Image (tube, rainbow, N blue to C red; front, side, top):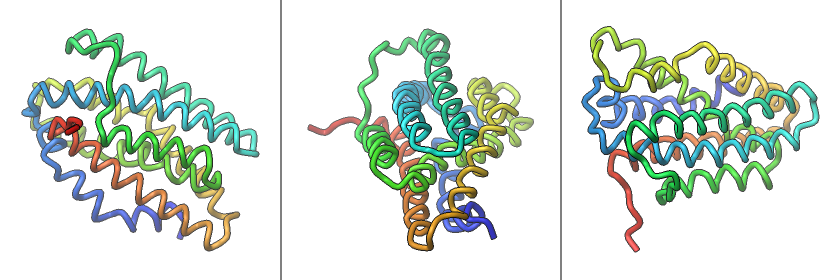
Length: 218
């Protein structure tokens, strides 16, 4: 069994909790309050900018040129999406240009940046994988239900994460992670699992924080 298959099996129960979250259920049926979607989109834009930096850092640490190129493209893709959000949703939803990260968003992005810079490179790659993989799985799940909700106001977002281009990136990220895991020691593979699981938990926290409109209490 590939490392990625073991990792997904490990977070299976968490993924099902993510699917059943009020945020994703209401996003799926179109009943999510606009204020919660606005909060989410603003935080997602901030996240994508920092995610792009983490991917760029990882790109510079990889040795195989195909992997370097792939992560460089992932990084530019994340920043292109962030710019597209500003040009479309930020205008449409009336969001401010400068976004202050929520506590959860800051926790998640700092985890990724720290792992990308200081963790073993295979651990860093495992740490960014849930953002690709869980988003793809959630996007596919929601997209598959859209026949029941033809007038969903969040259709554009849903289409973005269920598209073929994103699917190709996800498949490539999974493949690179497996390549690195094959060469890693058992202890290094365990560190990869820990990073993958932590980032998966932070994915859950990110959606939950948006649903709660999380604010700094102090």
